[in-house]
Length: 219
Image (cartoon, rainbow, N blue to C red):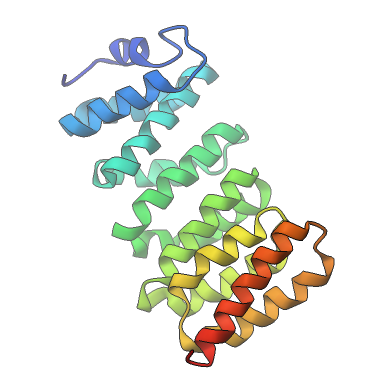
C-alpha cells in the first residue's frame, strides 16, 4: 500500500470505518510504518488541519503510533508537532507531545531548543501531556550534553508533580541519574513524602529514595 490519497486515508481511520476503538488507527500506523510510505504520512499530517475533530484525533493517533515504530518517518513533521502543542484540543496536544517524545532520541538539539514551548504545554495540558513532557526531559537527561539542564527541569517537575504521577516520574529517572544528582534528587523526593496521602504511592517513592541512597553511597 503506497501513496494513499487523503480520502483513502480517512476511510482507513477509525472515523472512516465508523469505529469507536483505536484498532483501525493502530493497524494503519503499522501498515504505513512497514511500507515507510512518506507520501501517505505527509498526507496524514495534513489531516491534522481537517475541519472534523474526530479525523484530526485519529490522524494524530496514527502518527504517534508510527513514531513508536519508526520515529525517523516523523522527522519531517517535527515542526508541525511543536506547532500543535498550543492547540486547545487535548487529544491533539498530548498526541503531538507523544510524537515529540518518540522523536527526541534522534533530534535532541531541536527538542532541547524548544523546551520552553514543551514545558508551557506540559503545565497547561492534560496529565498525558505532562507525562510525555517529563519523558522527553528524561531522554535528554540521558544525553551528556543536555544532562545538567534536563535534570534541573526534572527536579522542578518532581517538586510540582501531582501525587499520582510522582512515583512513576521518580522511577523513570533512575537510569539517567549521575553521581552528582543523587543528593538533590533524594532531597526533592523526601520533601514530598509528608504530603502524600496514598500509602502505596508513598512506598514507591520511599523505595526510589532507598535505591538512590544506595547508589549514592556506592552500594
